Length: 84
Figure 1 (cartoon, rainbow, N blue to C red):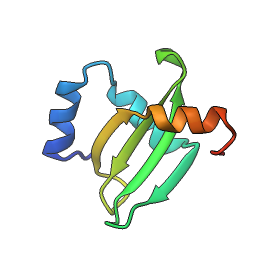
Figure 2: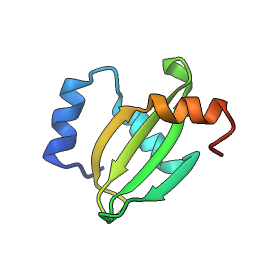
Figure 3: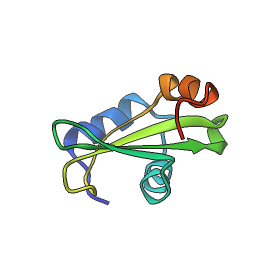
Figure 4: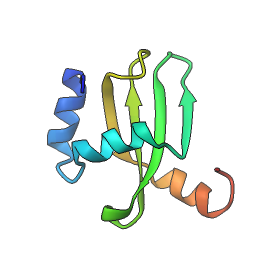
């Protein structure tokens, strides 16, 4: 798994996020979106962490992990039926 230095710092800042979860999000996302800057966002549920939604962002190559965080807004949109 390729990562940026920024991603490595974010994992230190967010020790609750596990690398395996990030890999799983990329492999089986609920939603994928290419951002205007070319980076790609992926969202998926993490059952082991209270079914919270983890957002993982890769560089343009779709492989290099750049950021990961729990996305509270996606969860509320999901519950309202505004997301897939």
